[in-house]
Image (cartoon, rainbow, N blue to C red; front, side, top):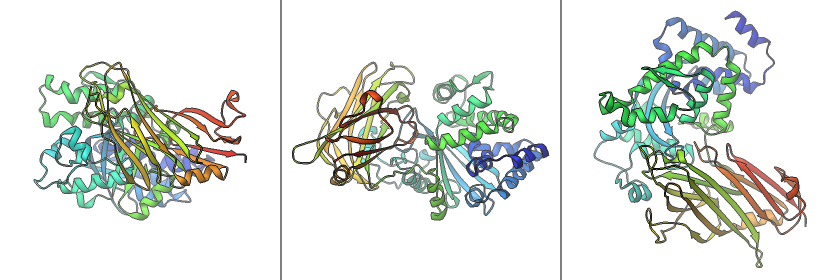
Length: 491
């Protein structure tokens, strides 16, 4: 232990890296389902002492310790509502909330309070209820807003607050004591298993490639074959967590740079998000871009949020792509088109079905919708569906339903005039765009074909050399994280 401490003391790491080491004991373990790291405390007392001793030592050497101390419960105990967001069944706030846990943490030592499937809490909800958003009523045929469906906003700070509100209404344990909400996806666990190696439970091996599918099968079907009661089917999470915790504890010091980088990457890629009830703590988290918020009100903006409407875990089999393009028109305005493309690679089975999706596309306020193509009334329908619209977090959104059969491709095409504020940016020769990724999404593609009608002087990111030197900006990328674009044009 002394040699390890000396190694840290002699390392010339940035503050950010040092900060992440201190969070390894908490946040990085949390993303593994070891979010329920409380199980560490079930092993041996010396491990409890070691965790607190190491984290305390690191914090003392950090010049900006406030956020670290807050999250780890050094200033006062924290109570976390943990949301398991299944991103193979996408919802706007990161994925379907299939399970939850409540832990308290004091001086970096966590304690389990509760862990169970959300259906258990929802089934015991009181009679009074909140009306759900219209698409939930219409496409899920659900007449009340349950905790499991609470993350309807694509802004985690909004959806987490709603999750906590409904958790309280359903009399969730310690609901009045919750100080923060943490959401994480199985993608984070898969990445953790890539470091720890496989874990074995009841003779079954769970690794980075099969973890999500194997776990989904066990809680949907496997429990029946093993004679496990429905309400107990997600107890496997506890056993998996314990097994994974053991693996992490064995090699966390050997591989701490990898854990450190993983925590940073999962937060950046929005596979893990924080929300704090306390406004000051939320502000600190937001300054680190850990809160999954919608950003960039004063620039051009594109963002779409998928909501899987009862189509099993089909998101795992659907490739998604946004093609965003605009061009000048005679009256001085710019005509924009956003094409969201869905390629269904799957086939009907226990995990995959037709893809039923309620889509919201977000653009700057003042965007004027012209038409929408591809909206459907219901699956396999040829009738044009209704198009909804509204505002949220200073954005204009347009919403529609689409269904895609296995082996087929579907498209939603939103045509609109750019907002006057965006046209003004172009006229001033300094255009900026933020393309945000949906919480929990993986490998979505972004293609930009932007015709400014005047010569491009500087582009960030740069175009390919064969595309440079004209009035159009062509760029393609994978939205692993939010993407920013800056274009300076000539007169």
